[in-house]
Image (cartoon, rainbow, N blue to C red; front, side):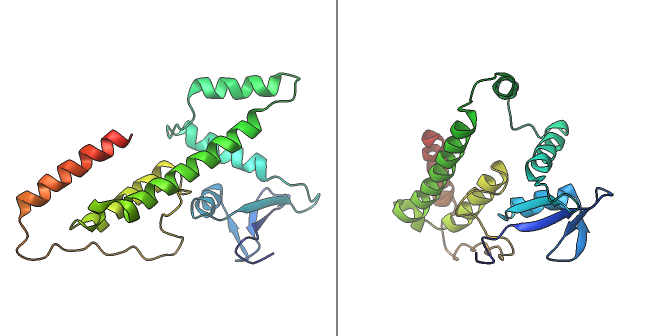
Length: 186
């Protein structure tokens, strides 16, 4: 397995402290959430028993964010999830959720690709800066797993300055037209 696809191994000690085996230091749940936002897979195991605790800790991270008002999951979806656990039947919910998130990721990747390559407005002055803002917005809305967004540790691209002599009113008009077209895409 290559180093990039290998999950970051976190060991949980008996004291419940979490130890990053790559950097040889202790980490918090927020640190782990940051690794995941940056696109890194993690695996959390109990040092003594060897049990995989990843799912338990990921659910704890989600619960903490939800309790802070960073709600992503609507209450009716949470109710449906609880029902799927409570029914004794084999649930299709995990497969459905995986397929839904795969479709969301693919759709975002296609949208970002269309914005940059196939859109004739991509050559419009200032468009690169707007695309960078859109990618940052998509990354923030999806918790960092939006394809096409900046990679972990990547330097942000500098915003392009408009060339001297450009007509500001024309740029404002083009921007308004672009925003109108983007709102219609939603």
